[in-house]
Image (cartoon, rainbow, N blue to C red; front, top):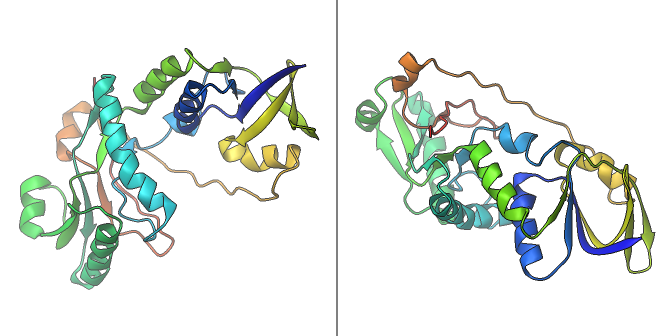
Length: 258
């Protein structure tokens, strides 16, 4: 039975990037992906927004990593010719009664280190997005968009040089052994010193299979509509209303073109 340092169950965009960094430090790393190639799940089925860090709780790791990660993302996209744009984002208050919530959102963003966020008035909206109705908005110039599939392709290419990517490989079980976990797949058995559960929507099943923490994932699905070419001039950047109490909002997103 072959022994490896790190086994990653699920080859999402985050772990394609992380596995590259881990392997570059000299660790033998394997990515197990049940699909024919990495990144075919949520990694390429999302809005493609490069987030600035507005919404996350102050002092949280999410807030810190979002602020640091967005600049790394812009640099990576520029260095690897990945279609992207630092186009900015508007979070719009439709009524004067929402101004207080808008101000609270801007204060949270500033506390998270998103220093370029500002509250803009109806005139700003009219100049920049004339089809958007609102009394004011939070303007986040650091928000951007990226072509998700191009990003995954670039990371997949980079990972293939140093990481053992095992497509069409399903993890079927795992057993704790001295010095690691024995991973059973539909193809072979491996002994890994460290196992990372990056199985996305199936992470709860994988955790249970490997004797890890017990939890349940409740997926939330988003719906997207694509504007016809003749209507794409209606909006030029992501536009959102204020999020509801659950933190969700319905927005308009763009996909950068090559």
